[in-house]
Each structure stands twice: as C-alpha cells, then as structure tokens.
Length: 187
Image (cartoon, rainbow, N blue to C red; front, top):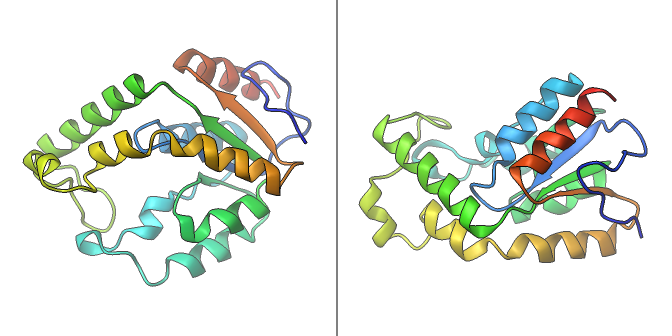
C-alpha cells in the first residue's frame, strides 16, 4: 500500500487527474482551483454539476461526471457518494485536507455568513438560505460540516484499501497547504 505523503514528500509523478478531499468548508474548491492553475489543468467544480435551481440535484450529474473524468486531465472535489468510486478509480492523486474541526468550522461559518449577507449567487442561481435556517435545517451546511467532519478519514482509509497504489497527500494545516503548493509549483 502506498503510504500517505505529507506536505514535503515528493510526488512519484506529475499528476493529471486530481481529487481534493475534505469535509464541507475545508477549502476543497479553493485548493482545487489553485492546483489546477499551477499545473495548467482544467478545474471542474463538482458542486456546479450537482446543484440545479432551488438546490435540486441535476439529472445529468452522474453522466457529466463520467464524461469529464474519462478525460486525460482534470482537478475536482471528491464528494457525492454517487460518483466517489468512479472518480477514485480514475484519479492518480488525492489531496486530503485533514484540517482540525475548529478550523473547518471557522471557515464554513465565515464563508456561509459572507455568502448570505452578500447574496452571492452560487450554482445555477442558488444562494445560501437565511441564516436562521441553521436552527431548522438538519442539512444546513454548517450543521453538515460539523456532523460529517470525521467521515473523510474513514473514506480515505477505505479508498486506500480499494486502491492501494493511489497517491494520497495528507495536509493537516493551512501551512501544510502552502508548503505543498510551493513544492508543486516547482515540479
């Protein structure tokens, strides 16, 4: 089994199909964009494929994921149970944002409040719901991040069992992220 690499370990090869894993609010999309820019690869934001108007799942989601992931190069976020397996099968690198819960919660709260106050349009016309829905919606993004934070570690462990040759980089802090990106830039 391939060992988990840290922020300074060299990659065995230049990656072309990259997944970024972590709980909601960990910074997956931000990191995916930065990696894509550094390596001149396309970034496919998986939330944009999944969420239709009024936050409804898009019927074309799975077929669009199958289509782009069959390509030779891409960077995307590793989420949505319906497509995790196919993405993992096709990836040559998984970057795991294994950040402390307190940091993730600060990030997801700040992001959610900013998006809501600015009425930022996200995917397909969607905006964050009113902040009071944190109290009433069990799937509110802030509650979701809290409740699911621990699940990524189990998913990564299972992934390594199924794909022992997959290269996995584990980043446990913001400084790890910056250190790893700096090394990637000179690759």
